Image (tube, rainbow, N blue to C red):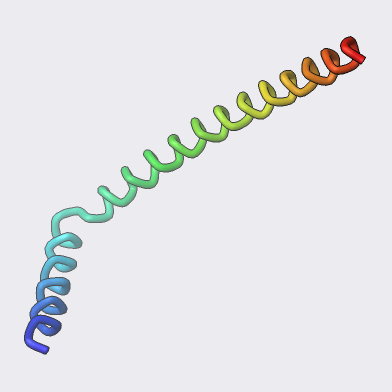
Length: 67
């Protein structure tokens, strides 16, 4: 029980310090970084999908030639 209460007290103190020393700016920076990473991953995903589609077409053409 003592550890639980100590953990809550430390958490509250940490939260207050975080807010007092510009915690909002850190959250905004993290949000911007996450958004940029998401856009990058989205473009990679689209490129991968296009590559897979082209590969499937080539495989189908090869199957047709072999039959």
